[in-house]
Length: 214
Image 1 (spheres, rainbow, N blue to C red):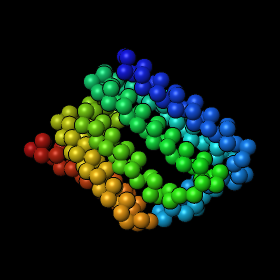
Image 2: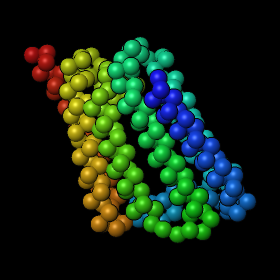
Image 3: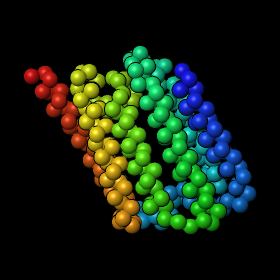
Image 4: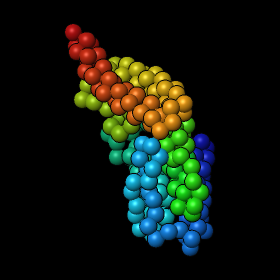
């Protein structure tokens, strides 16, 4: 309970800081803000100032409420107690990640220039690692983890698939770091491993299920 309270305080603190940063820089932000960058780090999407300035803080708040709500409606809610500290840790990790993106977006829109793709690689790699940590401990539920018809039908398949996913996501985080040495092509070291892990774990869960039934 104490850990949950601590993680909640951290998330609320980051939300208020993000809102404060937006409010502070709001007067000098452009009327059309850059909110998305391409693989090479070039701006390719714009939005209005009011929406762009507060988009991510609001997103963080909504996600935080959603993460608090999910265990309440999950038919397997009792299992969250077994991995709650890792669940809370992941909430903090995703909040910190979005806060970082928000800070970079505000800085860019007030005139600070940098390569967005390069600066995103390390936090994405860290997020992959945190996903791996969560998957290593997650128990069967309907909302968190690698959920396929086969993992939800068998505790054994759930355990083996998520353990495999944990290892692969941690490895994907390490591969993502290699992208730091490939300039604008570095983003491919992030995207390709993530997509590959997602597809592989789905297929893996099916074959593990077939094997257990035999």
